[in-house]
Length: 112
Length: 115
Image (cartoon, rainbow over all chains, first blue to last red; front, side, top):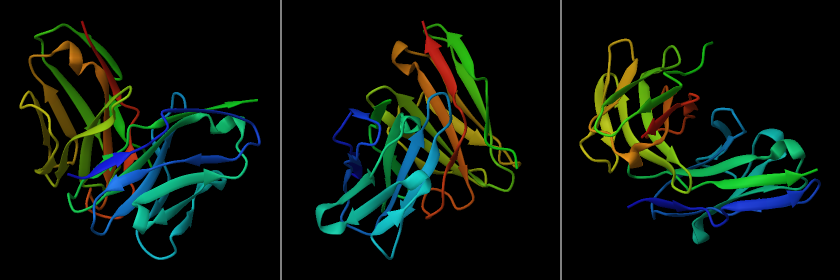
């Protein structure tokens, strides 16, 4: 069965630090990959997505993610975080099951 | 363009009762998906409806059911509530549905507390 694993449950950083959130999935076929973000008190919204082409994709607010097929990974990165990036981040994969499967989420806290 | 609207936003029920949650998708979207969100479990897929047909279903017991109307509005029902059903229930709409490359647009959720 298709599954998604996010290694970090809670990450705490200071402003201006660099960020990398891990995401691994288990599906050997063609996949569409997504990162969603949920800011405090707000609904989930799309941060970025990948379905073909350049494996390095750029999203909103300076976020980017790299698809490494050989590692079944789609890690999220940001060179310099801001306090406003405090949120919960979800990786999601859409493979052969024709449904979007989400990871457990990573709570990111940025200290000013 | 109005977003995804879910009602009610908050509700409290007792064990054994049933509950119905409603979702109005973005105008023009024919796919509605439901997820259960709990701390530590992330989002668990419940089911997806597309043009009034259930297209996919997650691994939840039969107490969880749903339907979609001709105007694409959707409802989900949970019967014989258990304490473990306490969660945030999220609805998401899309134009392409779960199998596509398109984005899911989420509502703010209905927070269910079972006492």
